[in-house]
Amino acid sequence: MPELKAILEAVLLAAGEPLAPDRLLKVFPEAERPDRETLRAALAELATDCAGRGVELVEVAGGFRLQVPKAFSPWVSRLWEERGASYSRALLETLALIAYRQPITRGEIEAVRGVSLSGGIMKTLQERGWIKVVGHREVPGRPALYATTHAFLDYFNLKSLSELPPLAALRDLDVVSVELERRTIALAGDSPTPTESSDG
Image (cartoon, rainbow, N blue to C red; front, top):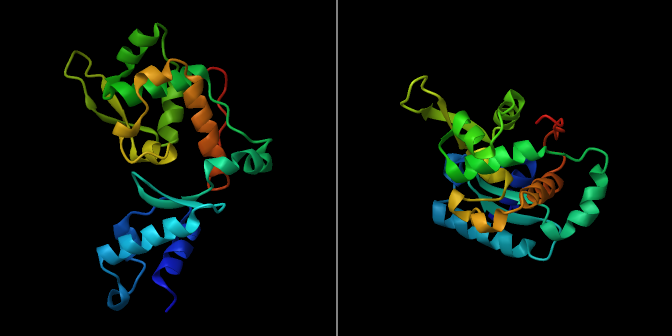
């Protein structure tokens, strides 16, 4: 049987998405399945082996994945120059509000932004899998409460919401836009990248 580290590298390359330890263990027949400590040790070795290469192993909310390091973005981005994502400021503001103030209602988002919210923005964020309805506010009309998802954390290379930059660092939403662009470049090719219209 090939070395455990090499098997994990092959599985993660083929997956194209983060894989949790439980899912990684399931690729092994029961008789050959490593224990969790052995699996973690092999993943740590793989991460060390990737240092300085064109691929890195990262742990995000959804598990482990192999991706292009940020340092290589200037070269890799040229492969997708014609299909980069552009996100409206309204979408970015909405996403930031949900991330930092969740759970939050649509009305609360509109109150903070001072403008009504396009239905297309919420639809886009839900289609991307970045937000979901997690309940309803116990007030007349019972408005939906929105929160971010594991897919949101995975996309932004976060293990948890506690890793979000402090609000003071996000005075300008261009920070969010740059991170969206960087993540799109790093994971380009694993799924189509939508282009937002000017209305969100």
